[in-house]
Amino acid sequence: MAWPNPFRVRDENTRTCWGYTFQLTDEHLTPDKTHPMKFSYDLLGEQALDRLNEISPPPRSALPRNSGRCAEAGDKTEVLPKRDLYVLLREHAANDATLGRLWREVNTVPEWVDWSQIARGQDVFYRYGGPALTGLAFQSLLGGMGANRVVETLARTGGFSTKVARHRLFETTQHILQCTRSLESIQPGGAGFASSIRVRLLHAAVRQRIMKLAQQRPEYYDTEKWGIPINDLDCIATIGTFSATLIWLAFPRQGIWLRRQEIVDYVALWRYIGYLTGTPTESFATPDRARVVMESLLMYEIDPTETSKTLASNVLGSLEAQPPQFASRAFLEANSRWLNGNELCDALGLGRPGWYYWALMAGQCLFFMALCYTYRAVPYLDRRKITALRKIFWTVIVDGKYGLREETNFDFKYIPDLHKTTHHEEPDRSGLTRPGIERRNLQALLLGCAFLGVSVAVGYRVVGGLVRHLLGAGA
Image: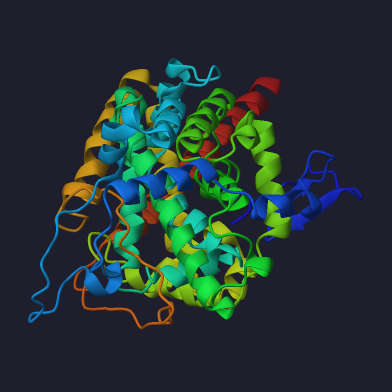
């Protein structure tokens, strides 16, 4: 929910897109500037993938993840060991020109990287951990389904059915956690560094697959209309949803405002991650530049379609009634509307929850604000919270019984196919057996109201006493 600004001055350059208001400047991108980026992409990553496939061909029996993750009981197909493209790249970089170029590029730290700043940017994620994960799920991912070109690629992977969308969301979160787990993790050779390279090669594999299918059947994917799959503009938008969108949309709508240095540090972190994944980094050279790009994409890239509605519904369906939060559909929709606004959520076909669920969202924001601002104000508590959340998030998302249970290597499992796309599916509600996050938010709301009531009563008595004292003294 966007907070109104009574001091905003509106003029002929004021624009409002999907509930977000800003001033249009000469720095904002225009469709003429963004159009070429729809047809440029990470060529070196794709060339490296070609060489890796020649060195270690992918198994012909590979199945799409949504149909092959759990084999049928009678399936006698031999289970082959998984390829690790990062390990292959590392092992063969010294003996292959193309692989060597990619390996030298990613291991060359850009001159604009300041490791102490990167470490501070990592801390920002955990300092605001609860609002960050909420924003990534309901604003960056679900709100991002309004990007009509991007969803055409996502729908063709089959990875956003209700059965696997939650797993895929956790895999993306694993990448974020690996990139923020420690400074060593994101530096060359670390786990976050390696996962970023794997994601880069995975994007190349998806792009190649869709383009080959489009050559066989042009109506499968309209390149002229949607651009090359996972192009430079798409990658810029993705890094933006993890950084700029959180800073200027998701956080403020939850009552969280970052300090200026935190914004600078967090954008710098994601600029480096973008560098590793093959994304053009000029758009994140400064926070102001990142914000301008985000606003430009809001104007020209967000235009929900029927495919957008299908994927958004399936994302909510995959989270509904699932542990550990056990959230109802109405509460998930309240999250979505609070973070994205009614206009976008109406365009995505989401339901309108009642006032009770809006009240629960208010309670959630009060909980986040109290927790984040209190711990941020005391350096000792701040460090303890950051350390604790690093462990908790990893346990819940990756190691826990309700999470991935094991680390993913971002191998090519959601494979596009001519006969496969993503359709609307009904959610599995079997998990909603006990109260979860909604009870916590109700308690936070009641405590907040009680605190407000006590504060008003105490303030009334204090002010009344002062007034009586002054009147008495004057007499």
